[in-house]
Length: 282
Image (tube, rainbow, N blue to C red; front, side, top):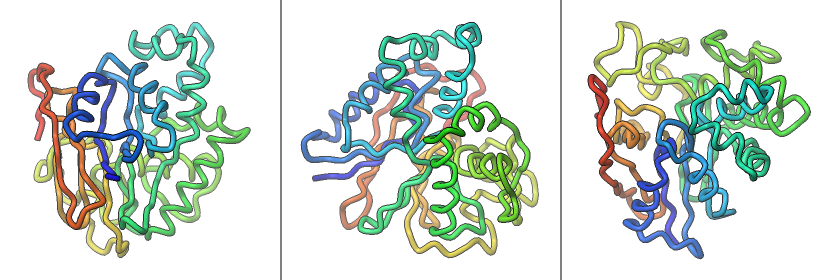
């Protein structure tokens, strides 16, 4: 009865299958945590969605920025949907699209397991968030995504403002700020202001910016955190954080992390995809 977390798949269905073979995943007994970005860029997003959905309660998935983008595109008219890349069009015009998208929209932004002592989030947390504050912020967004306000939120969630979460934010700005933190953040300043355009590995950022998990004065959380989103950070362990986006779609690796043992254990599948020129993978 193992529990494994798996990094950003981004449509890499074949690699996911080989990784599950490598870790000897047993769908009758084991549980998989997916840290978001199931779709886009790898060419097999439809197959990934069908596979992960088929796992039922054996799969815990948090939403990533690419997953939310797919849900937003699905709210456009048919002509607008037809303009996106072929990989996402395959999802949007599949016979089971509604079942897949309804399932995806019902996934959380944040998952907390106090027995395993792990939290799962796609990108990161605001510096001032305790576990309880982060859970509350996530539930606000999830409630909207699963209710009558879903379409309005999905069509208005894009944008870099506000660029930090604040308790006085209201309405769409509050929800957008939470989404930006949990699905887009890598670096921020001491006030939690997100540096959206900083995407390199630590040490390449501008002065005054910190990886979100190293911000001075950040809240004490008392729980280990698994995240993805940051392919140039790659496999990382430190500060109570386990980062597992290995950049599989960019020719890196697809990473799994076993959570239920005395100490977390990494496993990985090397990608055979070509690395784009100039693309740095940790």
